[in-house]
Amino acid sequence: MIAILRPALAVVGLLTLLLGLAVPLGFTGLAGTLFPAAAGGSLIERDGKVVGSALIGQGFASARYFHPRPSATTAPDPENPGSTTASPYNAAASAASQAAPTSQALLEAVKERQAALGGGAVPADAVTASGSGLDPHISPENAARQVARVAAARGLPAARVAALVAVQTEGREFGLLGEPRVNVLRLNLALDALR
Image 1 (cartoon, rainbow, N blue to C red):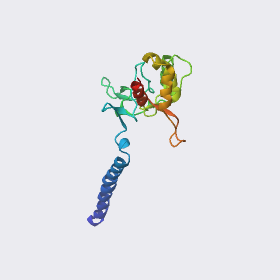
Image 2: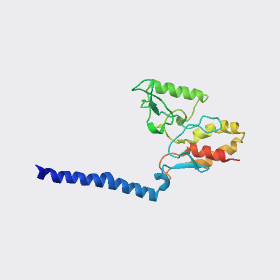
Image 3: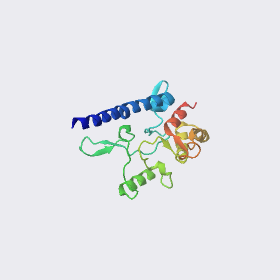
Image 4: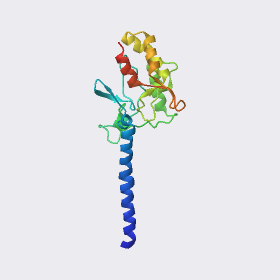
C-alpha cells in the first residue's frame, strides 16, 4: 500500500510546489517587470499621494465633478446578520446586483435614477450599474450630458469642459475591442488641474 501511495503523494507534492507556488510567483515577477503600473494596481497619484486606481470606480457626488456609473456593491448589514446593505463603490465586495432585466426592484431603481437626472432619455450607463459595480468608466455620451452642470458649478465655459472630455475619451482597445469610454477619476483630476 505504501509503495502505491508514495509516488502519488510525491507527484501531488511536486505539482503543488510547481503549479501552486513557482508558476504564480514567476507570473507575478514577470508582470511586475513588464507591466509595473498595472501589476501595482494602476494606482493614480496626485501630489505624491495615491488618490485611487484607474481600474476601480469611486463615488463623486459634488456638482463640480463628473459622476460615475451607479454602483451595486454591498456590505454585510450589521443590524441584520445574513443580509446585506448598499455600500457603493466598495472594492472589497465587487459584484453586480444579480437583478434580472425584468426585476421590479431594478426597474424602479432605474426609474428613480432617471427621474433624478431630469427624466427623458439618458445614457444607459447613467442609470445602471456595471457587472462589477466598480466600473471606473462612463460613456462619452454620459460625460457630455454632465458637461453643463460641471461647467456651471465651476464657472467655466461649457466648451472648455467639453474639450477636456474629448481629450480624456479613450478609444477602443487596439482600435476594435470595447467601446469608447472616459475614466471618471482621470477626468476629474484633469478638471481640478484646469486653471
